[in-house]
Every structure is written in C-alpha cells, then in structure tokens.
Amino acid sequence: MHIVESRWRLFGHILRRDKDIQANKAMQAYFNQMACRYRGRPTATLPVIINRELSQAYPHHKKLKTLNYLQTMRLLAQDRNKWRTFTRRIVPSLLRPLTLTSRRRAADRSNEVTQLTL
Image (cartoon, rainbow, N blue to C red):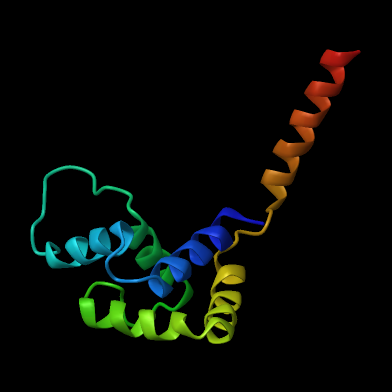
C-alpha cells in the first residue's frame, strides 16, 4: 500500500468519525484560521497535503480551503463505497511513474550493493 493511498484512507476515516474527536477539532480549527498567515514555509498538515493532492488530480476542481467544501467531503466519506471510488480515481493520478533516470539510479544502487557484498 502506498503512502498516498494510506493518507486518503486516513482522511476518509477521520471524516466519518464524530466531529468531537481531536482530529476533527484540529481540522475545524485549521479551516477557521485560514486567514491567519505566518512567515516562512507553510506547515505540512493533513489538510494542506490533501488540498495539494486534490489540486494535482483535479486542477480545475474546487480546493479544500473552506469549511463548506470540508463538509461536502465529509458527506462523501459517509458512504464508504463512494469514498473508495473517489480515492481510487485520485490515488493513481498522484503516483509518479518510474522514469528512465530513476530506473537507472535504482539499478546503479543495486549494483553498488552487489559489489559491496562480494
């Protein structure tokens, strides 16, 4: 299982849970303070990463930046079959295929390991 798929499964699990759990409270607080910006690099939280991946998969789609859209996602996640179908469309588009150069690097690494063990 890939990290991306696990992340989306976790997000769906959180959205299906009660709104009083700590994860949902943190997500609510995150969307309530969206106007407040800090200097420096933005923190890599679950909503930020999910929003980035959603933007990559659907460039012209709404962004996960408002409580209304979070509520829409929460309603979608309530039906596990719909959520599974939704994530099965998103996850493959986010997984980066191996390029020729990355294959060469992987082959070079395996050759180095083989030479070290000899």
